[in-house]
Image 1 (cartoon, one colour):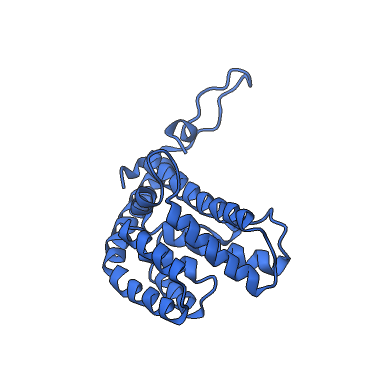
Image 2 (cartoon, rainbow, N blue to C red):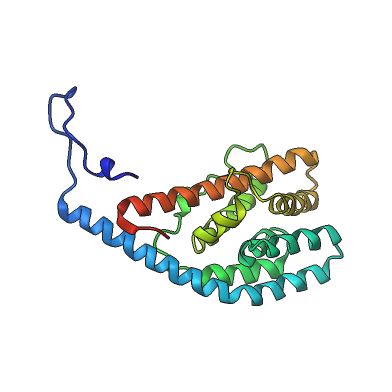
Length: 224
């Protein structure tokens, strides 16, 4: 959202003055944006301190599944400074213990003011999956978005290259996890299509995070 959109100019074609937002409302929007920024910075600082704990949870997950490929991909993501919480959230799609821990992480950040609303769960609305599968994937991707909003700057800096490309190991990890989820539900899909879906989910989440940052900055929240 831009400042121009908050204070419309006269509409000559309409022959009248467009509705204006009062100064008091505008100031309130800025206060909320600044408060959201402070909350995000505080959450991001705490999240870094939790990475070691979450990495141990992830390590426990790997011990229960002898998956060398997943271990390599997770190690690459952690070495690249991808938040451990995001990796945990990805694993939560197929691992009960990871899901429980991820719900704890989200609960600890429940007061983030700009967290998405339930009505915004539309990331997988146009897929051909059965309703129950679509709903599970939607809730999962919504959780990734919620977590991403607690560490937006770090996530965008590590998950996306300056050229706008996703970190390959993050996409591969999400693909393998999604494949396991679908296999458990006896849904057969070509690996390339699963990879495309994983890429779509991650890009959708990151785009929403980027848009939220820009909206907050335009309201006077400043840089993250």
